Amino acid sequence: MRYDVVKNEDGPLGKTMKAGEHSKLSTGAGDGSLGVAERFQAIETHLSVRYVPGPPADYMLRVKHIEDHIIRLEKEYPPWAALHFNQPNRGWPPPPRDSIIVIPPHLTSSTPPGPTSVSGLDAKGKHRAGKESSLLRAALDKLEVQKALDGQL
Image 1 (cartoon, rainbow, N blue to C red):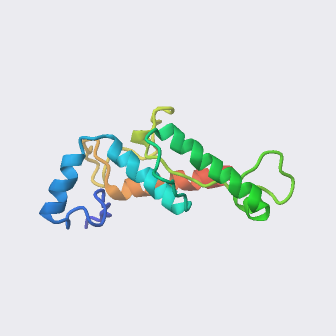
Image 2: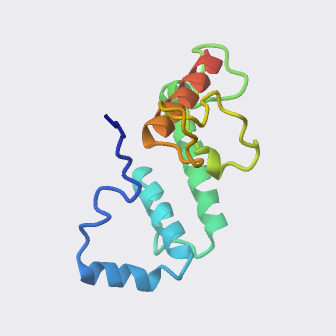
């Protein structure tokens, strides 16, 4: 019996998009700043940031405005900021736990991929051609999260 976990790489709506919407997105996909603009818009919406009359065209200026907004939140709501932000030289309350962001090993460039403890042999002793099952990948991802959490405590 073979057991494999499905890992949806495309996202939940990746294959259910209508043809008209897909063609409209693909025409703008050549513009590399479209995704960055959408991400900035999502962050600004989450932080309730609104630009009047409109957002600056320079992304570094938008980052500066977002940083200024976060600093203003820290000044206006010090108890909330003390609990939710990691501030330098803080004594009490203890700083919040680090938020763990797991980056898949194939996307990281700072650490070379180390040897894994799982051998390349399957249950029958046949060598698999470097292919990892999604169950193995999911288990290794979970192990990385656990290692990060253990190192944090």
